[in-house]
Amino acid sequence: MKQRLAAWLQKQWYQDRAPSILLTALAVLFRQGVKLRRAAYRCGLKKSERLCVPVVVVGNISVGGTGKTPLVIWLAEFLLKSGYRPGIISRGYGGGKLAEPMLVTPQSDPRKVGDEPLLIARRSGRPICVFPARAAAGRALLARTDCDVLISDDGLQHYALARDMEIAVIDGVRRFGNGRCLPAGPLREPVERLSEVDLVVCQGRPEPGEFAMTLSGGHAVNLLDETRKKPLAEFADMKLHAIAGIGNPDRFFAYLQGFGLAIEPKVFPDHHPFWREDIWFGDDRPVLMTEKDAVKCRDIVGEQHWYVPVEAQVPFEFGEKLLNLLKAKCDGQETA
Image 1 (tube, rainbow, N blue to C red):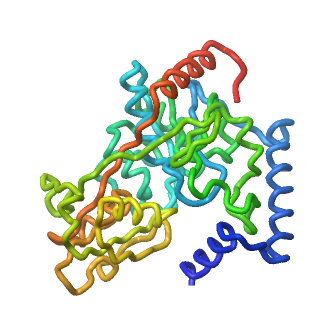
Image 2 (image 1 turned 60 degrees about the vertical axis):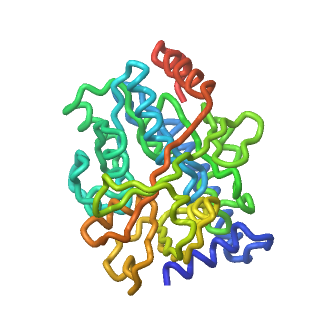
């Protein structure tokens, strides 16, 4: 039922059709609520907590996958190479209900901490803490580590945490759909919100003022034995299953097809908790999945299961501007 509803909404948002009157009316109320909530933080009716180190928020204004997680991993690695000691905080969406902030390790249970935080922990090697109240997650991380800058994975709309820099990630292919706010469109905030962020990163087709981001990879890793790696081109003569429980599964399937792969795709809801019957198809065909999905499948896989890792690539100018902005913020200039 949830999957059918999501598919119906995608058609409403991204196809050339006007949303229903009911959705349009609800979107007007949603947009007004967004404005009032932001105004409450700006005038002090609602309080934002400022931590003792700079906070860089990476988020988006639309629902669905935009490539935010690979960029967070890139940022952590880039800041570390630039002399910082970055830590990461996240809501931990898709995990369990936590009574207190929880540190994430490469061995953490994704059912408790969420799939994206676990992926980030494994790929970045940096400290990460999850909790719905991100300021509390930040305090916990700072109390247990020597981090001197925090990256907030998502949270562009989480104004309870004060931030020193905002980076918005957008999908260059789907852009903003019909340009409407939820539920009539895919937007969490109006498009004008992008004029207030520090940097805009676009995966796909950047427009003026946006930094291009691409995802590179080209190989698959076996889940049963991660020392086994195979170029995607070697799967070209096979019939394959491809599964995706991410925000924009079509992008993953198109990525595989770009290598000439003949796939039979199967879509699951974002953050889907996979079971054995979800990834076994009664044949010996290889099964390809995203790395985000793979962190939830390690106990139920066989030799035919592979994941496809990707890495974010951004221009040199992006990193240079990021460091200049971060230095300026740290030196006491106006914060976001």
